[in-house]
Length: 473
Ligand code: GLN
Image 1 (cartoon, rainbow, N blue to C red):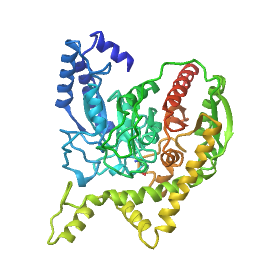
Image 2: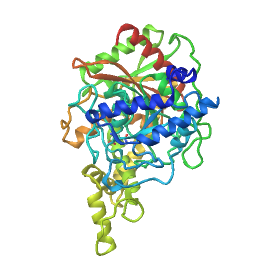
Image 3: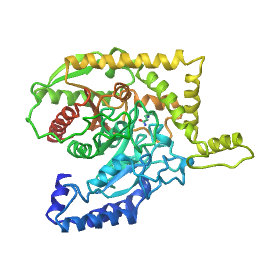
Image 4: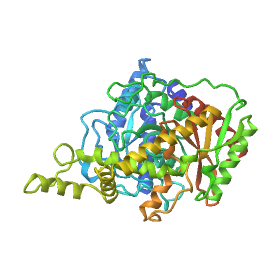
């Protein structure tokens, strides 16, 4: 992004030209990829013109003023629909911008449009969108991952330079890995969720996606910061890009949890991640095995909590306050018909599961138990970070699967086996590409650090990215 910023600063390119370039690309390639649910053709150009005016006056809002962005369609934007890829919010226009949208607008970024997702961010393939499937740009017969599959595919296909996603159990990192791009799930509380349509409030975070670690770091610095409108926002949430630092990883203690390299991990993914670990060792990192003994329970714990919280958060879609209403003779019938017609099968499944685990008779056995296991998982990581600085794992057990391949919801849930841990513990996690499988599909490596240590993730990620580039990946 520094290159683009430089061209804008020196007048080699205008924001209007830049935005037009991406709109042309969307027009040419999005019919194949189908990453976008909505493209703001006029609005993006108007924002670009305003940016060019500011530059002419010598008053850009930031070095990135005029560089466009795409936004996942569960983040509220004035003047564009916010559908969450659900029929229930088909015609919904938010009356306000989400906090992250205010922030990127304050930096001068034109919004190109809204990207596809699994309905209400529930899913790992973007196949659960009520509108259309998004295709993986590396192989159009495969999924881009999910739920931020539209944002990942748009970045990978060059339809936008960077994008925003949201991550509750892996929804930024899993699609980023499947599409060969970089994505960050920030520390819980670092990026305001005001204006993010809630899935599971104790886990949700908005985060940046881009082509390089540096781009993701820059975008993170634009969106991080305290916001009193999000009660979980942390006072010292702001982030300033780290100076480029030493050229080695000398002194960095890298932990490799063997639980993340066991059954279910595709051998090609394992080999690629292990090779990246060896490269980090060659840069001076001290690699040591660690154990996260409760990680085997991460998916069960995650699913219990995510369904419970989703069932509660989605109670608001009752045909009265937001979105679609199906008329009926009485109020109860109206609620029932609205929700029956408005929600897709995965959303209904989760509302039912979540309601079940919260019932008086099962609450203790499921929901409270999951909360207890969550603290054990968090404790495992606290113990790990007493001994190491960064934990390294594969991002996903496999590379991108075929569209239609995972019909069984349980199989779909296993896509998040390695990502959900970071959400449960609230810690930051970065994924970056570390190679390709024999079909030419991208493989992602995940780096985890302690709360507020995004700086470590970026420093490690940048050096790993560079050495991977040098050895030819
Ligand atoms: N794939 C996970 C799920 O379906 C994660 C979703 C998310 O992070 N929004 O719950």
